Length: 369
Image 1 (tube, rainbow, N blue to C red):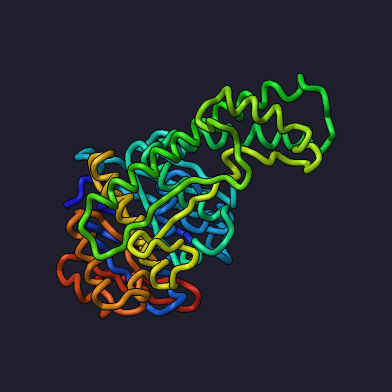
Image 2: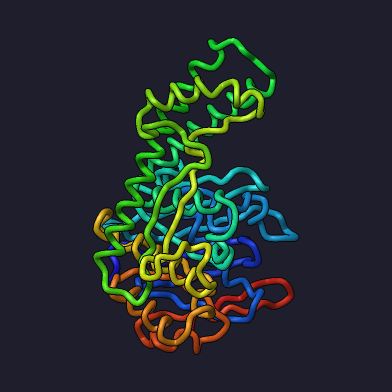
C-alpha cells in the first residue's frame, strides 16, 4: 500500500454530482462509464486537494452544481507517511475556494506539504505542439510537486510584474517607480528558474534510472528572449530588467523573465523534437514524464504521489496499457483512472478497485463494484 493515499472521498454538489462517496484502500481506482457521465469530475475533485486551480483550472463558480448553485464541498481522509489527515475544500455561492486541514483553516500551499497529486488529461495531448504557456504550466506543476513554495515565488513574481506592466503602459519613466518592483521580480524570478532547473534534473535522472516501456524525453529550458547571462542570479536578472525598460515600454509589457520560458523535449531514442513526433509518441513522452515525476517524488517525498489519469487507457495499445499498469502497481501509487468500459482495465484485475458512473437527469450516480 502507498504511503500516500485517500481512504475516503466525498463530493457534495460538485459539478454533476449531488453526492458521491468512495471508500478507498490505497489500490488504484478504475472509474468507468459512458462519456459525459461525470467520471472526470471525480478526478477534478481530487485535484483540488492539492495547490493550484485543479486539473481544469476552473473557477469555484464553475465547479458548482447547477441549477442549485449552493456551493460545493470535497472532503477526504488522506494518509500521508503513516499520518492521517482530514482535508476539506469548499466554496459557498461561487466564492473563493477555502481549505481546512485537520479542522483548521489552511492556505492552499499547505496541501503540498502533506501530499502530492499529479495528473494527465486529454487536454494535455497537444502539449508539445501548442503555445509555450501550456508547457510552462506543465513544468511548474512538476516543480510544485517537488517544491511546494514554488507557488509563493510564482505569485510574488506575477503580482510585481502586473504592477510593472501597469507602469509601462502608462509610460512612467521615473526609475524610482520601478526599483522595488524589479527587485521583487528578480528575487522571485531567480528562485523560479532554480526550482524549474532542479525539477528538470530530477525528471531526467528518474527517467534514465528506470527500465520502462515508455521513451526517455531529454528536457531543456529555453527563453524566447534571452533573460540574462545568469537567470538564476537575482542581481543579473535585476540588471536585465532595468536595462530592458525602454524596449518593454514600447511593447507595454515585460518581455524578459521566467514568464517567457519554454520547456523543450526531444525523443531521445530518435533524436527528434517532441513537436515533430507522432501523436502516439507525444502521448508516450507525456506518460514517461508523469511516471518519472512519480518515481522522483517517491524518493524525494518518501511516497509516490496520487495519480489522476483521465482516459489514458483509450489511447494506448494493449502492450503499453499493461506496461503502464505494471509501473503504477510497482510504484505502489494510488491512481484514479477513467475509461468508458471495464475491459480497459482488465490487466489490473484485483490489483485495483472499481467504480461505475452513470448519469440520470443531469445527476451523476457513482457505484463501487
